[in-house]
Length: 239
Image 1 (tube, rainbow, N blue to C red):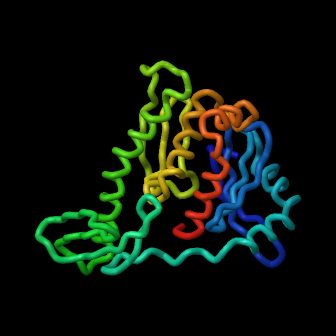
Image 2 (image 1 turned 135 degrees about the vertical axis):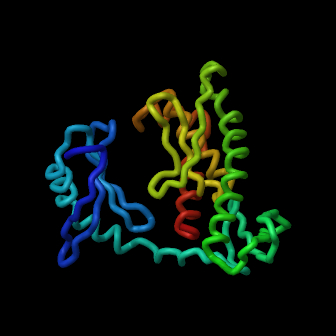
């Protein structure tokens, strides 16, 4: 299998299910189903595509049942006046009006958006994404600085932060010590943001998800499992 990931198909009954095979540092094979129905097989480096698909094929019954049990996907977001979008776990109603230069500001439970082309959904989407990004940068940096001292590492080794719009992960930690956070995390409650931040910071101490990693999580954020479930509920509701 070439590269770090590969798209394939797995036949279940009369259906061919798209799956993604992703090579990781893990030592065992794992099969994952995401809330939006995507299926991923995570395998150690060096595992062939055929081995990965054979592993998943042995778990066809579990995969079928898990996919059937997924809640109905949330409706695609609308980018128009009156549409509702989440921010820090709260529902904000878009109030869009014509304005020569783009300007966005929150007012209570409303997000006021002045746009040169208020009737174009693509323009509304771009403005909303930029508003999210501006707020994510400041808040995510603040939460990293808040939780980093709990690791007991030198302040000089504070990780760099990169914000990206990701589909399959809320965050990641690079081998060079950088933390990547999903832009869309800004839509989730602060408790969920802190869970993801602590999770990625703990990878600076333990790169895998073994017992020592979970021990660090338990020490720094004892209720992390509850927060993880809250984040899953948020994703089911908003996508």
